[in-house]
Length: 398
Ligand SMILES: CC(=O)SCCNC(=O)CCNC(=O)[C@H](O)C(C)(C)COP(=O)(O)OP(=O)(O)OC[C@H]1O[C@@H](n2cnc3c(N)ncnc32)[C@H](O)[C@@H]1OP(=O)(O)O
Ligand SMILES: O=C([O-])CC(=O)C(=O)O
Image 1 (spheres, helix red, strand yellow):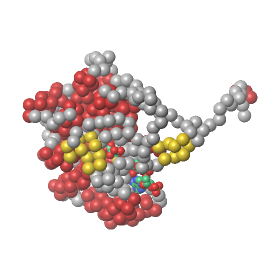
Image 2 (image 1 turned 180 degrees about the vertical axis):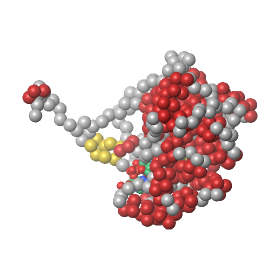
Image 3 (image 1 turned 90 degrees about the vertical axis):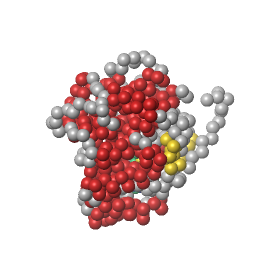
C-alpha cells in the first residue's frame, strides 16, 4: 500500500462500535483484506461463483476433482489434465506411519476428529521433503498432498475410535468413493458417492470466512502451509462456522419427530437462542449451496427409505422462514448437509472434518494467492485499561 495514503475511509453496512480510539468494525464485517479470483459471493441475491463459474453449473456437471483443479490452477481441466490430476491425487494416498499413529491414538481416546486433523496436518509438515521451499509450485504440490491426506486421517480416526482395523486407501477410486471405502471397508454405491462428491464440490471455497482468514493471518507471517491449514481447521471447528453442521444434526436428533419441530424452534427463539444452520454473515438470502444440497438430501432420503430427518428439517425451515427470514436469516449449507451424512451412516462428529476435507483446497488456494500480494496482518486493539500502575512487590499485594 502507498505510503502517501494517510487517511482511509472504510465503508461498512455492518456493526460499528465506537471506542475511545475510534470506530471498531465489529467482527471485521465487510472489511476487504485482499483481492481474489478464486470465488465470489452475491449475498443479496444468494449467488456463488468459483473462478467465475456459477456453483449451480459446477454442482450439476462437475466432480470434486474437476472443481479442485479449477480452484487450485484457475481453469477447468481438459480430459488429459483431469486424468493427470486424478493420478496425482491418487499417488499421494498415503501417510507416514507416525502421522497414522498420531491420528489413530487421538481416535482411540475419542478426541474430536477436528483435533486429530489439526494435529495430523501439523505432523505431516514434519515430513515435508523441502521445508525451505516456499515457491508457488512447492505450495501447490503441498496443497494436493494435503487434499489426499485429510480423508485418510478422517477415516483412520473413525476406524480407530471404534476399534476397527484400518482400511488402506485405493488408488483406482474417485476421491469421494475412496473416502467412503476407507471409512466402511466396502466399495460405496453410486448414490452415496454422489452425496459425498456434491458435498465436497459445495464446500470447496467461500471467499474469506473466518477459517480462510485464519489461514491467511498465519501465512502472512511466512509460516509454512501445513501450519496455516492447521489454523484453518482449528477455526472451522467452532459451531458458529463449520461446526454448525454437527450442531444442526444434534438439533434434529433432539427434536426427534416432525411434530416436535415447531414447538422446539419457537421455544429456542423465545429463549433468545440460535437455530443452528441458519444465518450468515454475507448471505442475506437463501444460501445457494443449501438450496442445491436440500434437493440431494430429499432424493437420498427417498432412496434410503427414511424421510424423518428431511421432514424434521423441513418443519424447522418453515418456522425459520416465517420468523427469521424477515431479519434476512435463512438456512445455510450446514442446515441440510448433516442429514445426508447421517443417512450414509456417518457419525455427526465427522461432518465438520468432511467439510475441512474439501475446504483444504480453498484454504491452500487463498494462502498461495495471498503470498503474491503479501503483507503481514497486524491490526490494533483499543486499550481501555490503566497505564503506569505503581508496581507492588508480591508480599505487599492484597
Ligand atoms: C459454513 C458456515 O460457516 S455458515 C454459518 C454456520 N453457522 C451457523 O449456522 C450458526 C448459527 N448462525 C449464527 O450464529 C449467525 O447467523 C452467524 C454467526 C453465522 C453470522 O452471524 P453475524 O453475521 O455475526 O450476525 P449476528 O451474530 O450479529 O446476528 C445478527 C442478528 O441475527 C440473529 N441471529 C443470527 N443467527 C441466528 C440464528 N441462527 N438463529 C436466531 N437468530 C440468529 C442474532 O441474534 C442477531 O439478532 P439481534 O440483532 O436481534 O441481536
Ligand atoms: O462464508 C462464511 O462466513 C461461512 C461459510 O459459509 C463458509 O465458509 O462456507
